[in-house]
Length: 260
Image (cartoon, one colour):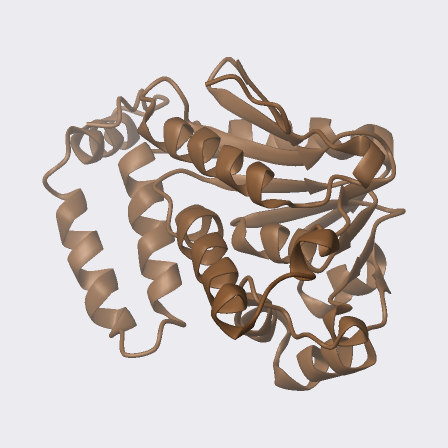
């Protein structure tokens, strides 16, 4: 597929996805979300890709929100379809993916942009990044999982404050609240994301996938997280990677995992 709104390239075992609508501050319109769905699912299904880094084109914005122009003609049913489509085809797929996804947040991450970053497993932000969920200034609330994921990350009180005031916070505040994993200079943003992902890629891929599933189960309604952990733990014993990891430990050498 030829992409018009994003860039997708592979370097080594890392897939780099860049939201490429710089003139629109990389706003997420319907077409961009559709392209993200294709790029992300392709990466998750490609054995040659171990993980994904998502960022925005240019220095100003990661993603400055949804494309508001698309909201004008929507009614209740249209709004529901928009939220459901985006959540199930992009945001939930990222969160529940079998490979690590890191958001490299450069500049504004507002509305749908912050929701995209929160769906990723790890968030690294440049020190000039601004984060927020300003939907109530439009008469809306976050619709791409923002109310749920932000609550899990920073707690109910801070989530309600951020959403109800619509205020932006700095990357430093985001780090303090637990929303951001690392804050670096703009020049260090992608190198830091690459460094972290490359470290993860040295670990057992099937174990990483199991860890994602088990950790996600900790906050899913109706899910027994401890049972999920036990199930995923036990599945690891059926992998060649576990045998390799144990042998490497006993033989005092680095493990060479194959994802099998």
